[in-house]
Image (cartoon, rainbow, N blue to C red; front, side, top):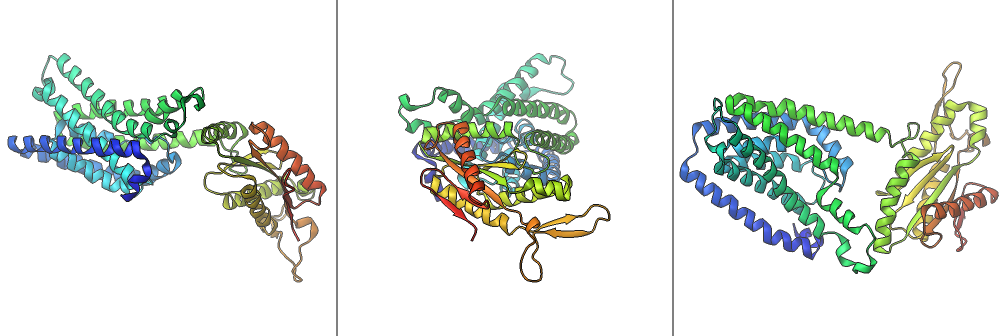
Length: 447
């Protein structure tokens, strides 16, 4: 938790002020609930919801972990709000908070975020629960029975509950994310023209994120109505939650497949350009260099002509895999076309980029690629050494790499890639299997 101080003065101040207030609300609501009394019906609902939540968590653990890993630091929508919203209306506050703790403790093991951020999100969920419970107490929901004919006041109460649940988390999490933005450290005159839009996205997420949250809450509302009529229907949180999570994972997989190239698994140029634009926008605000390298396979046409295009595809896939292993976390990799691949290196100057490029060049040079021959399917290894420790020349797989840095060698990605392409040309004419960079004559080659 000591890492909280690395979050920044503004978000830390927000947390230290707001979280104690939320804890105070939880204590006050819990004291009131115990003074009224927790009934056997309350425990019955808690048991059904806890059972449904357990089934949901077990069934979605892998899918949720993959979604969280894919989202990274971006806004992540967890469908556990199906459980929390139902609990907020049907349970007294102490039992609802106990259910939140149960579910969030399980989610911690796949959270992939600092403890202080995870705790702040958990506190925001607790605020939503307390807020929804207060709406239920103050509206017709408190006296609602399944056979009631005048449903207008109940509908208004449920709509208010959805609004309060959404608003409480938007306020708590959005404020922290907004206050943590580095935009506040820049003079207003130096902020990018669309800085307000960037800040808004940081705070509230995308339209798709918010639609997913609202749809989840509306489904939770329907489950609440069903469970109010018959308690065992609270178990619906499990199958409906599983279906929703699996559907969203498959939807995201489909979107991802449209952004990545099938043979290599690297980004397509269009998706690469979108991600590069965001990286360069952040780099411009932070005044840090960004480097780009163009990786070109040597004698690739000879591979296709000698062994066929299927072997050529296998070589491309193997080299792309080596690129992923040799690149760093946060680097963006793209198959630009043919045998060319591009690596964008955020927060990286020319010297560091050349070092990464040399590491990639050396890794590809010793790469051994399992190949299956046509006409019989005999397996062999491209790049393997013979008995004397040498490779046959037609099996040697190497790359020539050109490197450039922004803004030193161009203010735009297009300009920097033009410089990197020129350096690839220089590497090819210098003997191939080497890294070249401009101006400083940064050239390394295989011995």
